[in-house]
Image (tube, rainbow, N blue to C red):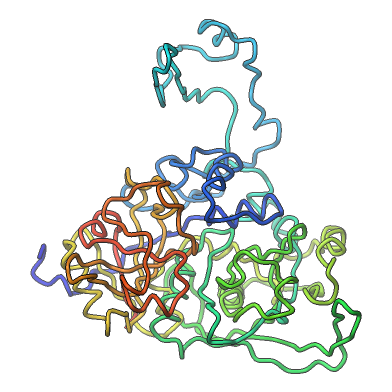
Length: 507
């Protein structure tokens, strides 16, 4: 033990700004098409579209776009002031033409002055050729945490370019996905984070649903006799109004509001080009189109609606002066996305920033996962910082809140902003993870079992993480049979203490 009372909670950290954007959901939203999250080739696509080497995307020290709006400050993340957020144009991102460079001296004519001071990122001798990768800060710009295009700024950050316009994600429409809802026990509905940096909230939702499933509210339906949708054979069917009502509890500080009961309908942002959900979705819908799922059922859509309810709760105090635009039902017409894109841009009012039915989801960016669990359950948040404990202490805390290797109190943990092991999506800096239990396969090493809010398992061999098992099945940890295994990982207790800044519980 590192302290006399490692089981005694620490004082709550001030201003936790935990969160990194899910790069898979972000790239899908930018491209307007589905990508295969678990394919090794996809990692190259992420690097290309997000303009950062893959191994530097997930560590805050490199200021990648996944950390839009925050930066490293000691061992924590701090918000970047609005005045320091800059919008890039296409001309800012254009790179010089190096096709005529034949000698190092030619680089000076391209704007590279003082070559002896330029940082060498990689140097490799191969077949008699010296291959250098340089970091010329003076040439061109790339996407980063404080500089991004207008599309990215509106899609994934809370910094609006025009605060007098109603918010909607670029190339997206609010669509009613109530027809996707299927509350079936055989379907996994684990929350999967979308294209904004609210892992703190998504991890908290998963932790509460895992330890106290009875606390999670689900959609209620009533028939709407005046509305119909048409199937592929042009047969009309009466539609249902679907909504979710949840009580959220004030715990003070940032990302908080007065205790109140919030009701939201089933309208969520859907990409115009791909019909994919833009933000939080159940794992059963993480890689599929709502339209394609409608025929056989998609799973329980509560994760999407909880995220929307939280955004509505946080922004409810803002003045609302206009009625919301009618949403498009994902089951009214297979071409709903293309037919609605022009309407969303031409009819957008200019008198307010949000409406009750269309809250700004990006306002949930960066927060405190431990407090979020308390806001969802009306319990008290308790924090345990890794620097005050060793790995055995942290493992003991999980075991003390578990039954049969499964947590029975909501628990979550968050990573340090930077670590030289954060070179892939399995372990991302400044990200919240759900703590689901502990494992001791063959009664040898003991592990903490976590779930990544992105719901993705990195391709085997892509990146090495000492002390991490990235494939967790029922033989390794029996409760794995009760959860979607994508995103599950197990971490040895000492490795956990190195990678994670802290953990917490709501009780």
